[in-house]
Amino acid sequence: MRDKLFVAVHRGGLLTKDNHYKLMRWARECSEHVLSFIDGDIDARLIHALQIAKEWENGNVPVGDAMKASVSAHAVARESSNPISIAVARSTGHAVATAHMADHSLGGPLYALKAVKHAGGSVAKEREWQIEQLHKLQLPSENVEVVLTTMMKKAKSLKI
Image 1 (cartoon, rainbow, N blue to C red):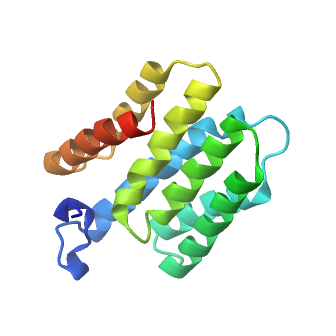
Image 2 (image 1 turned 90 degrees about the vertical axis):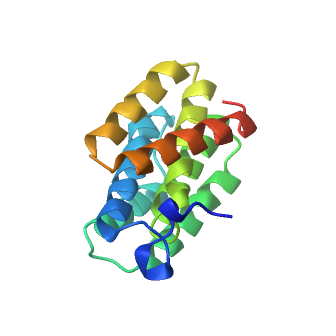
C-alpha cells in the first residue's frame, strides 16, 4: 500500500498540492543533474519531458501531458543499449511521472544514482547532493523522512 504522504489530498491522502510540486521539482532537478552524463546528443524527448515537468510544477500543464512525456522518456530508455543513457532516461521518465503519482519522485533520484554508478562517479556524493536539494525544499519533516526511508529501501533493489 502506498504511504498516504505520497497520495494527494484530493485523493484521500496527506500530500498537499504545494508539496507535490516540490517533489516534482526535486525529482526533475535530480534528473537534470545527470543529463550531461549522456554521450553525444541528448534525445529531444528527454528535454521535452523535463520541460513538461517544470511546467507541471508551475501549474501550467495537465497531468495527461506529463504522463505522455513520461512514456516518451521511457521509450528512450528502451531504445538505448548504453546503461548510462538508460538510467538517465528512466530518471527523467519517473521524474515527470511524479505529476501522476508522487511516489514516482523517488525514481528520478534513484535512477540518477544508477547513472552516476554506471558512469563511475561517486554515488555517495550524488546522494548527498540529492538530500541537500531535498532539504532546500522545506518539505514537512514527515515527508522528508518517508522519502529518505523509502529511497534507501528501493536503492537496494536497484543495486545502487
